Length: 169
Ligand code: HEC
Picture: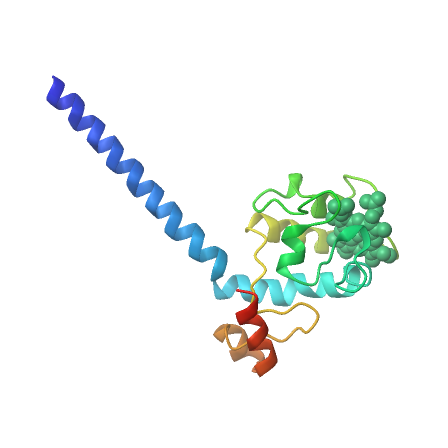
């Protein structure tokens, strides 16, 4: 009886360890090395929205509400109210809430609201973990040598950008 109990206990313990290792190895490297699909999604779908509709006010030079949307650091640092995305949870993400008109003041603060499609893309991006690949530098939409998939598509990596990517890792 005791033996089978301890067997069950060891089994459970092993299962927990495996689960934990799996979690660690999946989540950790993923945060640093996004899949090429995530890189392309961010570069093609998300960055254009941030660049054209948000960076006029939320840039490294004009950080309204202390928020810059020019880099992954800026995104994760957030604004005066703290981080603006909760990866995996758009409903709790201030960035999404402001553009989906769930929380005032709505964003962008000037011009037309984002289209439904754009809001849906931002939602989808946050659901997928709000990946901002370090290899995609914000205002310069060129990927670095880090991102082979991205490079294959537009082949524009430059030495300064690669240096940036190293600095930011
Ligand atoms: C015309 C300028 C302007 C534009 C463009 C703009 N914002 Fe803002 N944003 C502001 C100002 C001003 C605030 C501070 C307002 C407040 O929260 O009281 C702000 C605040 C925010 C905040 C809250 C930050 C915090 O912690 O207080 C988020 C999130 C945000 N903006 C996201 C966006 C996004 C995403 C876009 C693009 C879709 C965008 N903004 C475009 C001016 C702008």
